[in-house]
Length: 324
Image (cartoon, rainbow, N blue to C red; front, side, top):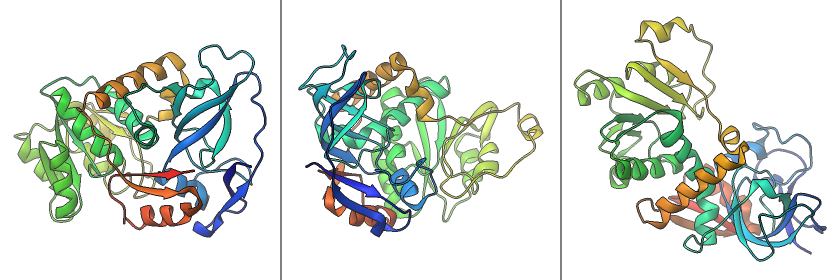
């Protein structure tokens, strides 16, 4: 029988149990997929620990994967058996075979291998909506991107350079700063040794940036507002340092009629035509070589505990995938 990872009680890596589970026929509007590669993300750890709520126990974690359609349910006409597909943000990915709604997946072009697809759907589509949909950015604009050495930041730096957008990236330490510059950022700020607000003002001749993309949250939020030019946009899309405390919205007025948004990938991909356009643009920019997805670690599905521990302990670089 196909192997699946199950969490019966949230906790540490030991909570990830490898079991055998039968997978039945797909119901109406569903697909059965044999998965060839599964993405590894911090969100998976948050579900394992209980920070993110799965809804009910037991559950199978994992948010993205790529594979081949084994069977289609009634009413599925857009996709066919034998077709290669991938998906982001659909809980239950840590499995050799799984069922999921057909509208959650997109067809993979031949130019995108399974491992690359599994490693880039969540991060790549996040990069797409940040750069292409949250703010009207054009060639010549300058943005600030926090945690630019991370998975999303690495893709954004490359994609922004391709679009002619200058990225000022923040990162911690010489090694990560070098990675940010190598990915295409125009400038990098080491937040461990530099005041990023002062450096942004220096780099923009006191004007500030058009947009700040902030996945750090509590530690950077208010100071990110200070980096914006008048009418600038703060895009708060994560909270790795903790939740942003309540603040007075009059600060947006006082700091220059600023805009604030808290987007979510789930909202962007909920509309299927939009989802398909986003994926097509991501596939095209990766296939062209303008954006490279660097898969550095591969783990057997049975060793998912070690994989998550390596990710959480910062022992990985680039992207990681699980191989069922």
